[in-house]
Image 1 (cartoon, rainbow, N blue to C red):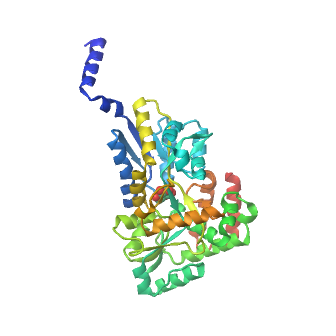
Image 2 (image 1 turned 90 degrees about the vertical axis):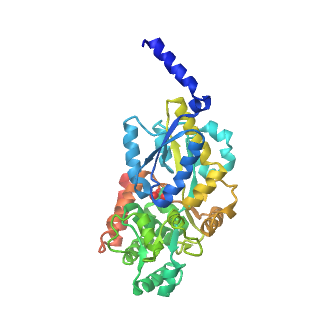
Length: 419
Ligand code: BGC
């Protein structure tokens, strides 16, 4: 067959397909780290919607809570000149990818779908690079939660804690009754999730801001920060000594199955309770991490979009961006994910008691300084500074004899050299 004939054959084959199939048959590849049972159920709702719109979803799920492994994969793909169409990138990191010139503008989709009006201003700013939308947010997670199994608490005669002292009192009761007081996975991001909750509790939201947003030296090395490390060390004595490397969802399962009484974790933990068929307020309780009532450490999941060449793939990418903020998707995704919808006009009666509480607390925190970006979940600092904090916290936590006063100095100098 000569070239003209080959072309003719391709054209006549194409004419057999319906026009919509040809136009809509782009692919969007999505790099993310939603791989636990609950997370997978949530991301499935996005995949299904994109497929319903006639596009192909190519899943690039990289296991590893907190996303460090996914970020490594993403970087190597970008370096090889082969980034996915969309990737779970959050907070200040969006600016770093934007500055590399790799992200595409989503302004048309944003305008057509009224994103400026739908999103809180703060959230809209995070999604923009140089004044243009380059990412779409899907939710708002709250990090400073404590998850409780009330049956275990009843058996141990423990009381739901509202202060750090009460947390230790409850932990003592649980321990005496033979339960693991605090389920935990020994991975750097999980250690730092607990650490940031303690900073919020002991330093308050302003101190938290000075420590993790301003990276203020006197706050980082102050007496209260020494107290944070001391308290972290004490909390560690109520955790399973075999926790090293354990995934967060395995720790969540220990609370769900009644082996442990509590877990300190963001509200993606709720996705595991939901996937296990448990009901908020009945089978489990969610309370603000003791001492952080009125504060809300936020963690916004977002999908940043990379520049693509193929027109059909760009259509698929734009569809993903549009779908992510549609009310139907915002409802089912967040019901599964444990988070708050990021759209401000949603009917919250469709959500359970924990998410409704989260919505009320978000509004309350927004009025003052209570709303703070999560350090452990990429919202407060560059990933380099975050990595420096993770190293110091995890090294400290893995050494029961480590000295809190030395740790604050190490924290300060590690941050300084990572800046
Ligand atoms: C992400 C969540 C995810 C959690 C555990 C967080 O950093 O924002 O979406 O569920 O990590 O993997």
